Image 1 (cartoon, rainbow, N blue to C red):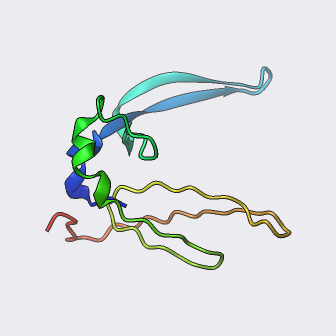
Image 2 (cartoon, rainbow, N blue to C red):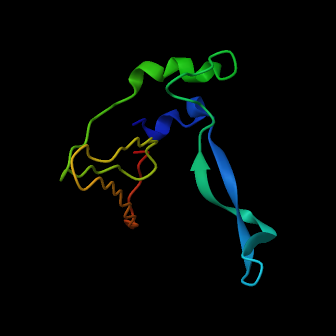
Length: 114
């Protein structure tokens, strides 16, 4: 986890939304329009193997990362706007199932920057 105050150090980028059309007979999906709005925010920095020559600002916050291990049955709360990366794997026992659920809810009047 990284605080939203480090967005500049994570080289915040935005993925533009798109509209798609599915051709059922050909079983193909094609993009019909690229919108100006963005739906996802991401960082190009590989936090496991950061390229500090390409992303020098990340070096200033790399040591500030908060990490945790979430076990079966556990829940983690990630505050709005906090940077996070999730790595998951199925249980080694049967059944080998892995499920991650993201639930987002707006809180009126809440600011993560205060």
